[in-house]
Amino acid sequence: MKRLFFLIALVGSSVCYSQPQTYYLTADRVFDGEVLHEGWAVIVEGDKIIAAGPRSSVKEPAKAIKVNFPNSTLTPGLIEGHSHLLLYPYNITDWDTQVLKETDAYRTARATVHAKNTLLAGFTTARDLGTEGAGYADVGLKRAINEGVIPGPRLLVAGRAIVSTGSYGPKNYDHDQQIMLGAEAADGNDLIRVVRDQIGKGADFIKVYADYRWGLNGEDQPSFTLDELKLINEVARSSGRVLVCHAKSKEAIKRAVLAGAETIEHGDFIDAEIGKLMKEHNVTFIPTLAAVDVISQYRGWKKGVTPEPANVTNKKKSFKEALASGVTIGMGGDVGVFPHGDNLLEMELMVEYGMPVLNVLKAATSVNARTFHLENQVGFIKPGLKADLLIVTGDPSKNISDLRNVKFVMKDGMVYRSEK
Ligand SMILES: [Zn+2]
Image (spheres, rainbow, N blue to C red):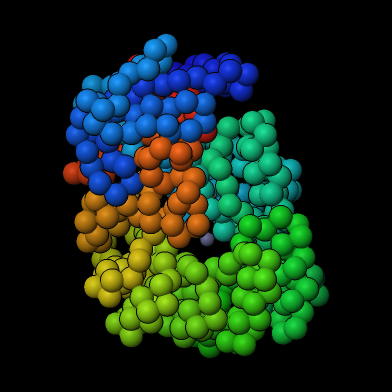
């Protein structure tokens, strides 16, 4: 059935390009990115929202296509904050095998399906945090989506991402072999050249692994010095791009924040001190709760049956500290570790770990939009913004899992999914 609707969407898209359509959308509830309203209507013309407000003031235009589903909620298209479209779940194929043995062509072919599944789940924008050994396949994927060759979310991409020498995987192979890493290694002043090279090849932001599990006992320890991170940030900033850091340990988070990183990815060991520092520097925390949850299950944890593993307990603790400290929390699950299209899992865990439901909805819309500097394009329902819209049945402001009941997905004014 999904395939049939997608076909309809594609047919619709060719019409849309030649002659802009007007849509009149109504729903029982409209979440505008910040507030939930009842009795609202939204008008889309071409690729833009041109009106949104109470039905008494937003009248149905002549010749508009009417969209309405019973017991429905209309939201901005959701924004995935941390994806890896070039990866797929490790319980199907482990990370080392994907990175080392699969060709970029094979991985890109899979990524086109991942992109489609992401969009059809209502995620109309995604920030992708590195191809993990597939070069700049993400830059090509983004281009194909933007040109309408394949369906997918609008993308912000990292390209290869940067690690320090010695700190990343694949690990523990015979050192006689040169093993290709999941990201580009660079250190010291060479970071200037590598950051500029990644920018030149299409990176929208610079993603750095600020720590790695290379401590004496396998614990997360910083990889780059503070000065190295500052250097990366300075070079990235001068091109109008930002630094974002994978950082789990306290020290790596501290260095990343002081160096000027805009987002902290993972953040497994946030405490009151680190939470305060992140808040003071206006850094957004992207928690990736789902990655830790599913990896623990891949390793044998039977959720609700066997005792909770330490990494899950730590993650819950860290997330609660971030909430208590008032750190801005965005939404990003590290999807790819788990199936693309199941992005909602992260939002369900955010609720499970104590975040108010409405704030989780904001995290995946207005908060992520502001964090990624896209607030003048997406993440809100208001006139002038792109027509990226999602309709689900039920009320996700009360039950976040209602976002799984997808009825309608629009991106750039084009309908990609419309269930009956
Ligand atoms: Zn990641």
